[in-house]
Image (cartoon, rainbow, N blue to C red):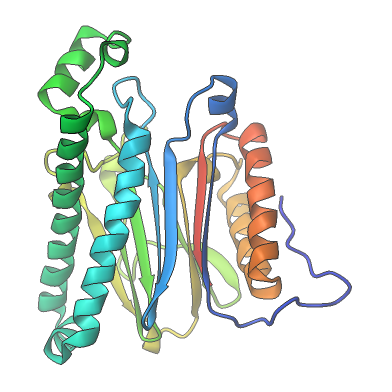
Length: 299
């Protein structure tokens, strides 16, 4: 387990800094099998907000372009979330609706989710126009899988999507598919499902996952909004793809790791914490799930 321990009693940069970071590494099993990394992640700071997105491309044979799907999910997610947050910042009426009117806020977030799915599918169509499926991609598939991707090319790009946006007064999370959201609250890490369990998804049982490539993805998106102005205990957010929690034998061991991440980013310099996490995750994959791993943090 990564320690992120202080060195010689020094904090290396202050305990309450605000920042973002993301790390994605290729899984050990993918390295052995010479398979590309199918995870992707991005983090950034806008005007008065911080955001992070992670995406996990599906691993089955028919998802042979899922690495591209995960890349596009993060790229488009950043574009759409940035535009959404800018509209809230620049228009006082929109800001008031988002903050004070739950029904209008729900409608606004739903439109954001639909815009992400629409743009993702448009990018898939453009990629298919430029690079149609090749014979060597399709020859590895069963007849049923070949029929599925030829009928719905987006299936080949299938990927999950999780985004978290944090401001001084609120945070909101968008979630489609597996992966975990954690918050650092009252000095410890805990799994986060929203104030009323909004992020829980019954579809994720039995190794199934919802996906951007599903025909009803807009109906499968989960989201939550939390007024952090009245919930001062929340001190940060960490997103992880499923390969991270699957590398631990217990939920508590996973949460201990998440707690250490928070501690490291708050006590070390950003570069030091990033490098330590980037060095540790490949070892975690080797000893654990063997899967690609992504971690995104707002601290």
